[in-house]
Amino acid sequence: MSLVKAKKHLGQHFLTDKKIAEKIVNGLIHTDQYHQVLEVGPGMGILSDILLERKDLETYLIDIDTESVHFLAAKYPQLGDRLINGDFLKLDLTSIFPAKFAVIGNFPYNISSQILFKILDHKDHIVEMVGMFQKEVAERCASKSGTKEYGILSVLIQAYYDIEYLFTVKPGTFNPPPKVNSGVIRLSRNNTAALPCDEKLFWRTVKGGFNQRRKTLRNALSGTIPKDKMDDHPFFGKRAEQLSVADFITLTQHLSALMAK
Image 1 (cartoon, rainbow, N blue to C red):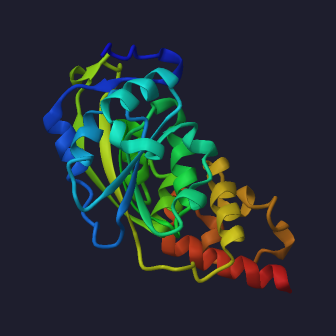
Image 2 (image 1 turned 180 degrees about the horizontal axis):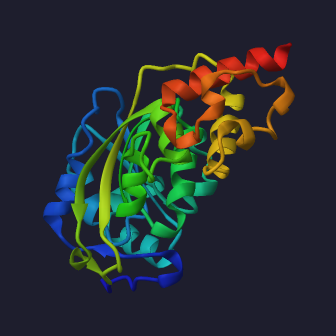
């Protein structure tokens, strides 16, 4: 069975350290809440080997790389339709996973944000995610208000998930080695079925605030609500990075009330 060649245009860096692969798989801790797990970008299957040993999980694999899929089909003939040759970003997840499930993977760095937004789009089905990202992205997701790393992804992810930065992975554990360190994070769906505010407005407010993060929210949100409708609420005098997730919810509730006048 010939090995798969890593493809630069797909952002492939194959993990070679089995102990790290075991640590990633062991990051799945909420398995009492789901039975199925989808691995994104399995490559040559270093995580898959461990996942498929788990009797408590039904593992699915998806890879956009046809060469990887052919390799994995020969390696794991028992998978059948659970091995998918396709694009995770375009996959109709609810048709495959009608019940709650988990996502795991050593994710391509060039589509990290898109993967996280896909998970947010399916937050009511994806109970848990354990994934490896570029360290900078992983830290950004886990960062708190008041830091320069804190941004749109930080707020949106933390509104719906509890996040933990698990560990850092050095470049030498990959083939080919990336030029940066990697970070593994775990997302665990929180108990909030829905935010106590207009969720579409919440997303607009978060994105509007951080898209002009050097400005106060009074100026950054002028495209959402005219300045002459804004009052003297203290949040309007702050910058987006100064507001916690709870603050953004409060601000969204306040904006809804102002816009209704």
